[in-house]
Amino acid sequence: MSVIGEERVRGGVFREISAEDEETQPTEIQSLCMNCYEDGSTRLLLTKIPFFREIIISSFTCPHCHWTNTEIQSAGRIQEQGVSYNLKIKCKEDMNREVVKTDSATTRIPELDFEIPAFTQKGSLSTIEGLLDRAVAGLEQEQPIRRATDPEVANKIDQFIQRLKKLKDMEEEFTLIIDDPSGNSFIENPCAPQKDQALSVSYYKRTPEQNASLGINTTSLKTFPANDLDTMRNEVLVFNTNCPECNAPASTNMKLVQIPHFKEVIIMATNCDSCGHRTNEVKSGGATEELGTKITLHLTDSSDMSRDLLKSETCSVLIPEIEFELGMAALGGKFTTLEGLLKDIKELVVMKNPFICGDSSTTETAEKLEQFGKKIDQIIAGEMDVHIILDDPAGNSYLQNIYAPDPDPEMKIEKYTRTFEQNEDLGLNDMKTEDYGEVQS
Image (cartoon, rainbow, N blue to C red; front, top):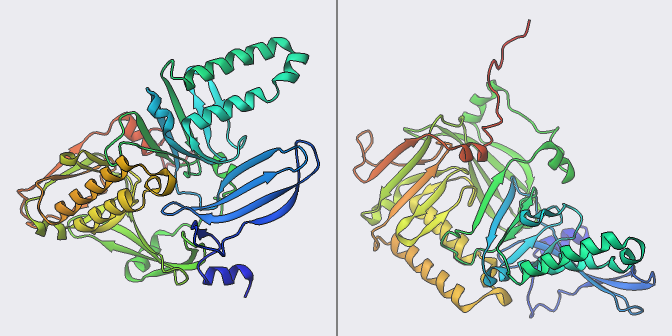
């Protein structure tokens, strides 16, 4: 067995950060200093941030010129969709928001017509203030040479640097956009679990060019012929994959299931024998509906927790009484019960929040999330009078009607016409279906 294989058996190559773990030691290698071209040393640490993902931390030091450089790289998988964060920064407190920015992310400030293209900076775990400091440092790095060779350009860059420093001092409001096709970047929501009015998050399907830049080959994807649908309905298909937690070989089971009074869905479940990680995901087996669907359920009894529920990956969940909103793509697609969905929400918001652990945590945030967890427990126990709203612009979500085929007096189902923005999120605006399938003479 290889060394990597042995490490996976003992708990994975990427071990969680812990001051008590004496076995976790960085690897030191001799490296060339890019500042003075003498020999320096690079220390590499493969680790896992609790409740987040695997990362590679590298730190370079040169004993000759004392130049240092620290980088962070994501070692996790590329997400199924890209993500774009749009944040309106209005006050000094916004500068303290923590940001995870991968090397594949593009950063923009529209007010300055300023952009940091993808793959021009290494990934970083910082704050918004830290991002601006890094941008200023990058622009100032070659200024002495520019002043000697091209004073006019150097003067313009000096003026631009002053504008960046004014934004850092919050002399004016501005917008920060982080667009990451890998889906691994993140901007902190200090209002969690409530919705952040200043922050909008959208997910999108990557273009072939973006897939190519990330090293993803989409030409070998397999499609199932229509005559294979009967096989999928009658059998459980098994195919090999890798565990999203430890990356060890695992198997995924897939089955086409008919939900009564609804439609067919595809259920996929992965179970890892190495680390014990288990996950399931649900994909709609049909097309996007002509109208969006909004389902509102008034919880009147704890027995409502046993209702079957299908939440597609395009569905958002709202609980107005506690000012909570879970955006689309969060938690992915799930076929579970109402109780199971609420427990998953609590786990995502409270238990797996990377910004309430270690040095990133604040007492105020931890107390707020603890209160939110208690409210979820009260809802599950039937001790709070609330409404659960499932809003799915694709129309592919479902909540069981226990009175079927009669109407449910506590449940309201509304059909609505999607907005342009919702069609844009679903990728429908650019979809051309006119004359599709006709043979040109």
